[in-house]
View 1 (cartoon, rainbow, N blue to C red):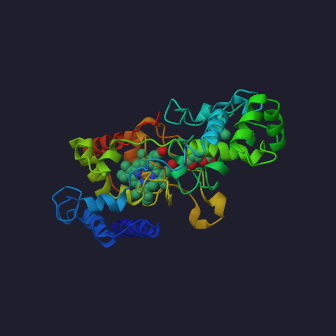
View 2: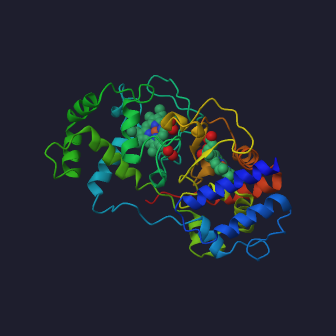
View 3: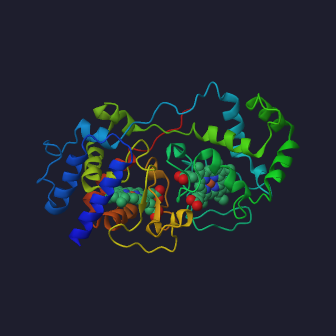
Length: 349
Ligand code: HEC
Ligand code: HEC
């Protein structure tokens, strides 16, 4: 068991190092996980000398504050305005009932708080709606990464028979062409194009809007140097999150969203969903999912690809068990949950 666990952790640190992040502390941090695993009492290895305190280099190794913006909002104002209107508009669905916003509510941290989401006929797919907030930062879209970016992703649900149920691209374009306001908005957003109201431009506009959905949080203030931005429990939780190995997978600017990992890496996890296997056809991709971003995680229950985990406490315990082979007590869960709460942010006005 220990050997397996060690191997799994080495693999995940290796994968992290591969993911292109600044990893000046690579050997040091895998050393920490190593001592963490065998020592158990957190004292043996110590995080870089300091007793329990995470130093700046360690933080920088794992995390990055949100940028102020990832799209020029002035230059793209017309495009973003169109995208927002489309995002909120149920007329993009076959029966005028379902908008992107039905499943990814702007007033509810980009989710619908349901395990799986009802589409235009009330039918549900097998997966939980992930938040659209900060999604533009991910390496790819969907739990299995099958769309390369938010622009491509946005074109899927409109034609998905369970979700918005429009029959064809042409039907969507015809429908929008009958709405004068859209003719004007598309013309403004795609000034240089002869035929601005095209299907792919719907994706460009919605994607541009989604690029504005960043939610800076207290953790970003902390990463930028404001030591008081986190309270003691949150700081303890952050440290446990790093020391236990959570940050091997949930790291970077979105605290996740930048790699694919197997659910049940150490202790097998029961699920029929084969995740990325459906995209790549590789045996090794069975039960592999995009590591979710943990930004706003306290607000986006239920959890996991199938929405089967109701509470954040349970999600933390299951992660420790299945991804790291560790049983954790209430002290760990409470502190890590406190830290995760500091990732709750706000959309800019
Ligand atoms: C009926 C509910 C529903 C509707 C309507 C819907 N989505 Fe989703 N969305 C989902 C589900 C479920 C997933 C995850 C599916 C998967 O991974 O296979 C998802 C995935 C996403 C993701 C990927 C996020 C990530 O972390 O990978 C984005 C972004 C997104 N949707 C945006 C949109 C946009 C934009 C629209 C409107 C054009 C839309 N959705 C319409 C349910 C919905
Ligand atoms: C080996 C990589 C890995 C490690 C280590 C890891 N996670 Fe995860 N985490 C994942 C993956 C992959 C998922 C998605 C699982 C799924 O839905 O099937 C996930 C999902 C989650 C979720 C639910 C997210 C959502 O939107 O539903 C939470 C919360 C979470 N992890 C927290 C943690 C914590 C806390 C730790 C440390 C105790 C941890 N993770 C360790 C890879 C990892």
